[in-house]
Length: 126
Length: 364
Image (spheres, each protein chain N blue to C red):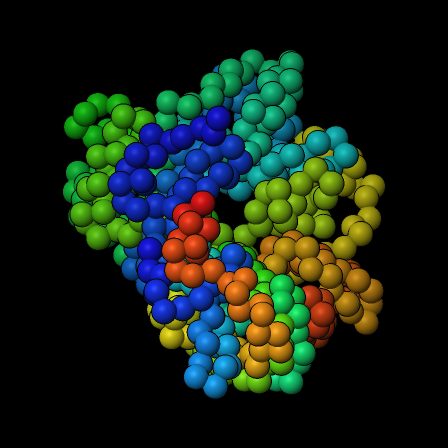
């Protein structure tokens, strides 16, 4: 299973990369894209939306099903990946490259609740 | 525990992802559902459909029995040996018990192929309707079934089984034939399918299924799962039992009026009287989504003439946009625009007359 060690993870199968400026880049894991199958549509959040950790913010639709994507952290949506929305299959091809949205975290304490790669590996193998 | 087809181990060895379908452990895909879909539209793919049940009907009264049992008229089969007919089997209220295919093998011998999920119920219903007819019904769980579909399907089949070419190359569309391979027990080969492409469906002894599957794969036929089967049949505008229709709807409501043959006034098929009395509550037509998104079953539809609901919906890999079958107010026509509620949005969709795709080409 491809779970990069440098990223953080949520139990709901999102990966989170914390940038130098504190911005959180969010996508779905390789395990998640594989379980979903061929991805054909991404519904991404509005920029400027204030979200709470655990809130549904995006939808990834594969040929077979629609899957909710949750905000792993509270904060403000500051960017969405329109290139990925135009080529949804890029999430299948490169799950850790094709990010979905960026959050400016509002509550740094929440970072501690995210999983590391080893913790996520346990979740993903269940 | 789920039932397994004779090809279950082969699927696992080929990397299939297995899901439950109507009580059977079946392959949903072998990697990419979309690639499997395109393989059938552009080249050749094969499906394990051994979960479906063949039922052999034999007896002096086989034809009158079928004329009573089915909404389509099996009398039309007599013009050609091996001819196949698609029909609904209705209850007394005109509700659809199942959709099936009947093959005419001999004046006293027919084969009926029914859906997996309804097989036991169908067989019990058929048995309960034999009174007064000299017929025998024999379920053939000893058979496996492989559907080979796509523009190159027949050529690749003949490449793998050259001996079958001479006797089955000239089969008409919707015609089948028994063919004896060297091993003896005859196969039943028919030019039918559920994808909107040319192809064959092969019934054969379960013990031979694995070898045949492997030879077809070596001939370049792509293994395809139920996922691709669903997107292919929906593009082809074909209804799926249990999803687009069931006992609660009539063929007139399910877009299957063309399969109800009332041309002979005296052919008293089960459900006919009820159909004659009934007024359809809705019609089934196709939708093409104009906005970005994916149609799914059971989405609400808002129209100028009332509400509707999708019954099947998916992303169409051939069209690159989303399509659905939907129950719509009777006043709507192809070309009309409707709104589909998807989560918090109302997306625009155009009403079309299925099929969406036939022989690889968009028709809408």
